[in-house]
Image 1 (cartoon, helix red, strand yellow):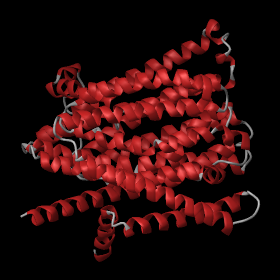
Image 2 (cartoon, rainbow, N blue to C red):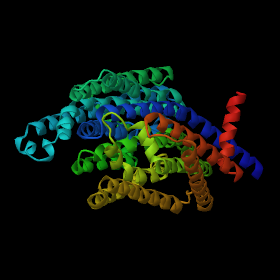
Image 3 (cartoon, one colour):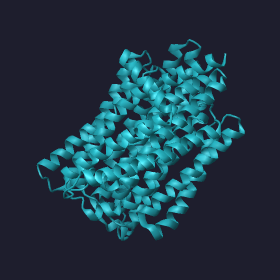
Image 4 (cartoon, one colour):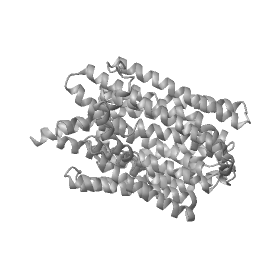
Length: 540
């Protein structure tokens, strides 16, 4: 009986990993293009005031997307959709979605208009413009671009909610491909500026802003087409009325979602706070944080968010059936996978920062001084990769059970702690202190959530997880050391781009071979699980 149960768990885990791998592949394509975009941004915009203004102006509408699109609102909607659809009322589900899209669209339009008006007013107030910070080029760029970029948040919030509905319909791969569009559009604009030597960077930024808006609009259209194909297109009849705001579904949705909106985005809010405070440190601080964030966003996006989307769907079903044993099994599996894949990624950033930044940033307007300003940021953000990813997979354990308040309180504690530590540590360690503060606050957030799960008897067994973490840390450190020795003796020459690319290739291959080889020798179950998926795909 036990063998049968274990076989069923293994089969389910393989199915969960297989589903998330489809999303992972789509996200991987987007992140690979993102690396090309990082290279072009660094070379075209540099690491000073222009890049600082662009990154912060774009971060604000992007945060709106994470809060109301990909965050708790979408995750809160999924159990409600499951509840209505589970009763067999597909038409009722469509009408409910129509109401949700109308109300959310109205709120988003109001937010976009309000932020744009405030930005316009601030740019015209003489006493504010007389302040030293607002006389800098980076602040002028932020105030000029923000009203143009804000509608992107409108489009992408609706895209995020549509994506959650499609995930419930078990459509994961195609929605994830939508993220490619932003990178494709921005790469085209940056490439034009790079190859045609456009020296008017303010004009370049304006062109990039219009490309951002166009990509958001096209993504929304594509999402609606996918909803129609899955027989889930929102029914907008009789929804264009203020009575929609009093609809019981809307009340239930926002009652559930509002606490979780903050509870599910602690890491994202922390990153935005980091950039807003970094504006006061000088021209290089925001780009240093942003370029490193783009690098660590690869493992977070490729793995944690991919498996989180699948995990939220599966946990919602388990919670609805009150099958908590299956619920805990999914959570334990996800945490093990985070440790196994994200710890080596952290080691890669920490040990090979110079090679990574030389390949993806150094050159053009991005100088060695800009790279040096990002060194300490990379050390701390890199070490925080497993923590950031762990937080992404723990939040669904609460949101799938509609317990948004718990993640709210934990995130509020983390955000407040992050701000306090930021203000203290930035005085001594500049942007490096800001990065350290974010990691420390995320550790506290994870600890609170795990303790609550343990109190509810829903936490996975600690000992197997601790052994998995210990094993991966040791194997990753040994693999990084061996890869460092190999690249030191195997690759020689001046540190130009071509040599850096060769070094990165040697490091990447040798590190991966060592890590997976040593893990296989130690009989890590994650290697077998990953191998089973590949074998299954090959047979198929």
